[in-house]
Length: 210
Image (cartoon, rainbow, N blue to C red; front, side, top):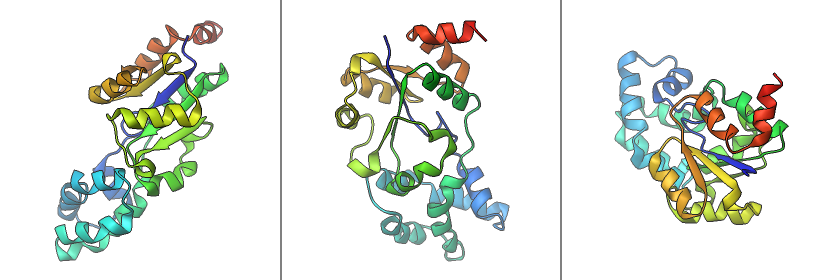
């Protein structure tokens, strides 16, 4: 029986959408400037460095250098403010609440920065989680087996009684190498719920009573 459900964050619990982020933290930027900011400031060459553990201040100079001079003032605002512009995926908070209500342990495993890790407690959907592992704090990213082993060891998780929910198949495959089964999220909370009901008997009872 499944006792632990492990969630990815971006595109599973909340949307990471450069357009929404730029609109929220740089509202006075023109549409043309927003297009440039979305294309340049969100290039994976910067965000991969953050996911591996570099701080915002270390990435900022290179991000600024890649932007037109007139837009460089926005780079720091994006790096510091993006976590305040993350709309939740519909239905996922309800799903997490139901899992917690039937005694399932809920964990987060995300390729995400140290900056996010310091502010994770401010993200409403993450409240009540049993534990969290952020790649930026460990230097490993998915789909490496190491990041899953860190979660397993840190929280004493039994891989055979755990399920990992992620939107990328390569990350599901990484979890499998660590002995954790997975489910690829396709944007529908109902699909995750249907999958988990087959693995968690208490969820079947939960829905039959509603």
